[in-house]
Image (cartoon, rainbow, N blue to C red; front, side):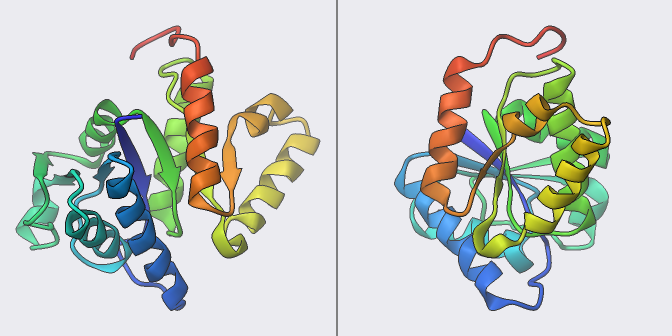
Length: 190
């Protein structure tokens, strides 16, 4: 895995453990030589993730729409800042530059990004693995809801099994790597 796209909040949230987690992930990705692709923000969990990866000598690619850059939300010290015109283009560029996707704590934007790349994988538009870093059980309520949806017959159990989930980063990276090595080529797109 050369690069990992990480979806996460542009705010800090209420629990400082989330900021600590984002910083630890950034540093560990850099230590492992895995480039970071993220939303390009300089504040909140995004900023903690990017700063720690940069401080550890890692590659950091930020992707942000022009209108958000104009509002001075962009992290100007990243290795490369890709500026685009829309949120749709942002997600496509992040997907293009990453080999896998992980969600850390976040809100609506994080959920939307996660579900889009996960559904794209299920539809065969890419074969890149998708995962949740469930440290502290942050994603457990969502996982419980997804299991309920599966029990209702609206989500195949194989789709849930395909989502890599781990409470710690090392286990999640191992699961993503395993899926990356065993993934068939996408049926459509790339």
